[in-house]
Image (tube, rainbow, N blue to C red; front, top):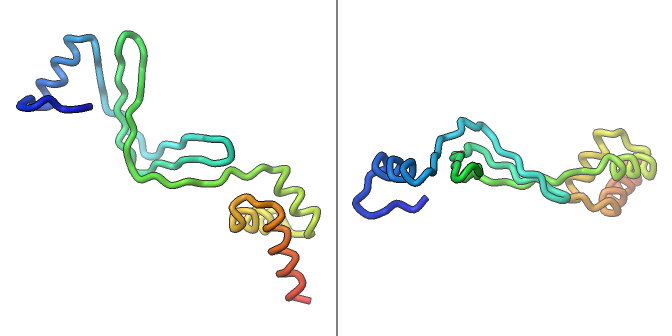
Length: 115
């Protein structure tokens, strides 16, 4: 929320309440936003819930990182193609940023170097 010059936070909160806008801090420890194919992870978040005219909205700030969302079908395909365990397939897929072909090639090359 933008602060008005010469207005302390308590005055601002009082003015917002008079306009029918309420806000409160949400004691969140982590926020996860799921997108197609990845997750946004917000650690050490500062979350404010704002209620205006019966509608709630959330303002979130913090340290943002991304995480790939792996499809179980992709993991199974890698396991079938390479004979790798579930954990090894997941690790390879994570290292390949979700690229199935790259994960299969990497595991195939690892297997070839062990023979």
